[in-house]
Amino acid sequence: MRYSGYVKMKFLAFVALCVTTSAHDISQLKVPLYADPRRAAELSCHFKMDEQKLHSVKWYRDTNEIFRYNPTQQPSIRLFNISDVMVQGGECQPDYCVVRVMPPPISTRAAYTCEVSTEGPRFQIARKTKHMTVVAMPQADPVIIGAPKVLKPGEQVFLNCTSDFSLPPSDINWYIDEELQKPEPWQKTEVTGNQPGGLRRSWRVMRVRVPTTASGALRVRCESILLVEPPVVRDANTIITIHSRTQLSKYVSNISGTNVVNTGLLIATIVLWTLIKISRLTSL
Image (spheres, rainbow, N blue to C red):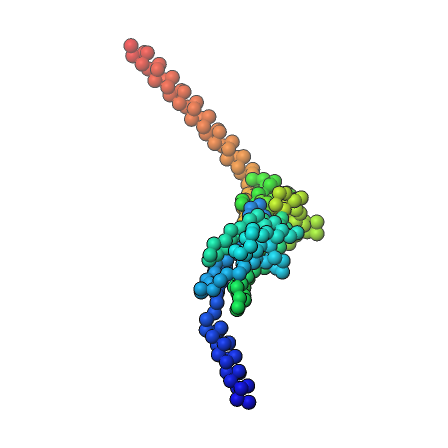
């Protein structure tokens, strides 16, 4: 019984020693929140060994190993391409490892894990994980096509809103005077085919009917929304003036009246100039 108690005490002391002298730690893990499929993403793992000897550094995408560094082997770095990602390269120093990956051209979210292990006798492992989402942000505002400057009551017009290239493709909403427009059954957001990197444009048509009693102006806004967290929103605006027949008649009448006044002034000026010239000649 005494020997058993002694062994138990020695074991607990060994466990306590291992806990209080933790071999190493991952001090910083850098993984982009968003990655553009048109360019490589850089991931870095910084670690402190606390006088322990490094055995290996491994990177995983979800459960698949994509990178391994083992300073005692030749070559010391090995890359593992998988179907969803291409590993372009990496480098390691005594306290960090960097790996560059080319994201897949699809909108997806994956976990990237750095695993740092020590040599024996402890063979301890430290891990940290962060998530990266493949997203291509739109670089420009959407464009409204087909909006006239002036409409009359009772008229209708079809407007088209086209977003910039993005991944995933943007969703589109229409607003008139800041009121969200419910789409008609055929007014769905359409997308183009895939471009390099999997990017696509979106577009949606809206029919605008001008009430017969309308006047003033319609403030039309198109909004493209990239559904990520947080959402990325870009918009475009246009103003359509509504002129009733009465307003148009007044406008035409005012133009005619202005022309008559201008013509009268011109004639009066010519007559006055002629009289001045005649008076000067007769005085000679």
